[in-house]
Image (cartoon, rainbow, N blue to C red):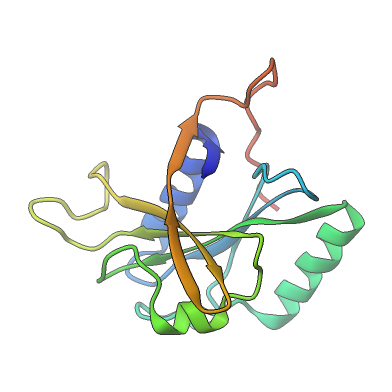
Length: 157
């Protein structure tokens, strides 16, 4: 199960809406081994495409060095789909290289009367992708993390 705080959930959805009609992408880092997404890091979709996302290799290298320096790991790797449901494509599955990460997809596509934009509901789903196998998991949005922790601050790097 992915447990994510409301501020980070809202930031991921806002990024997906902001970059629409192109796919948005980013990472939420957390302390190594914690499985707790804490630091929201929106990334630039280097492909600038409505059907594909790609992290800029230099930005990604810089991010991984920074996470290493901070004893963090990518807890959530997210991107949006602008015209399809929030489910990993074959390309998404082939690029999934972090077996411990939650792969979050947000769909901003038009569905029914909703558009996924400007206040309409979005599809927000999380998956584990290991060795090409996709397994959907529940998502629990909490106002803050348990045991007296204050809500996570969304940090825009």
